[in-house]
Amino acid sequence: MQMIIATIAGLAAGVVFGPSMGQIQFLGDIFLRLIQMSVVFLVMGAIIESVGSCNPKDLGKIGGKALFLFLITSIIGAAVGLFFVNLIQPGAGVEGVAAATYKGALFKGDTIQQFVNFVPKNVFEAMATGNVIQCIVFAALFGLSLSMTSDTEGSKKLYELIQYVNQTIFQVINIVIKFAPIGIFALLGGVTGVVGLKVLIPLGKFLVTLTLAVLVSLGLLITFVSLYGRLNPIRLLKKCQRTIIVSITTTSSAISLPVQMEDCEERIGISKRVSRLVNPLAMSLNSNGLACTLSIACVTVAQFFGIDLTLQQQIMIVFVSTVVTLGNLLVPGGALVAMAVSFQMTGLPLEGIAILAGVDWFAGIIRTLLNVVGDIMVTLIVALSENEFNREIWDANEDQKINLSA
Image 1 (cartoon, rainbow, N blue to C red):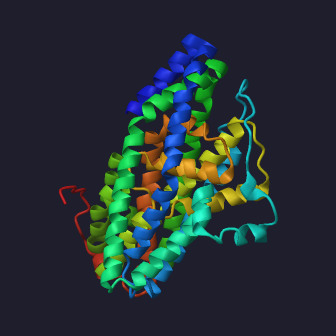
Image 2: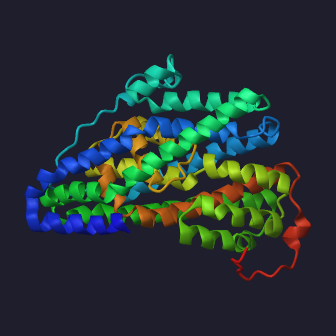
Image 3: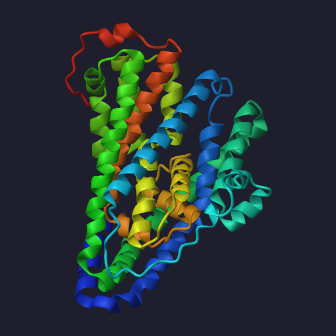
């Protein structure tokens, strides 16, 4: 709410005071640096904790299927977002915006070499240079190794230490996010002072683009699951209705998880064995809505600042948007941090965060819907493939009334 108020105040101040608002833009620059400051530790810690928490035995057939589906569904979400952002072009056509410097070093060289460069030669060098993809690769392997040695006392202590470090880094992010309204006010006020109220155009179009992309992504997922499991898609949606309501009212995948698991087990018919492994794992590692949001945000910002992206660069944005969702940042303002990571990895101007931050709460409602329903769909696919789906529960004439007391 403070960020929404800061957005409105920044727009108003920009109109009233004009270009003179640029004198306080340094406050916004400090905010952007503060977001970048902990990105590497935050992403690495979240992934290590998520992967390291899994039982090595469970990271076999079921876990492998789940991880594969996480990847595929996130790519679909990002790709659908890319399609709609190119179709609607929410950031295009705003006059008076100075062309921004584009530092897309990630896209230089041939495609094969780019993938080779994803593997770090030295993880400390990757951390020092802010090469987030290389840090993610190391963190995933570190977390996997930690889970494989989880029965030793040393690994348990190391995992607890990582949890404590993550809690501390999350607290740092919480402190930084408290400064967000000031940073957004300063940055958006400066932009509005130069451009005027035309800056509102991308915000409305951004939300429309995200809404359409999320609805189409949901439609594709539900259609596939319904055909694969020979299930009625309307009834499937009804059985998810409690989870849907909780997700859009709280904008939180974490808060939705208990209701989500109960719907999976008691209303849909997914076995507890599958539900209690895949759903918690999906909460951290599967974020289709965020992947879709990041894909749209990257191209919107490029359009706003007059940056022309090639097809290869846009395909790489889909990949980056997918990778960044690993270890979903379950902290307030986590999407803004994810945007900072995405813009940093793709060489896009970080100033774009201030433009989109004011509507992030509304975007959170939309993307969380895809996040949680996507998690249920993945869990259901795994259950169907493992014969862990109880059709008696599915066919039961249960009371479909919404009861949120659980």
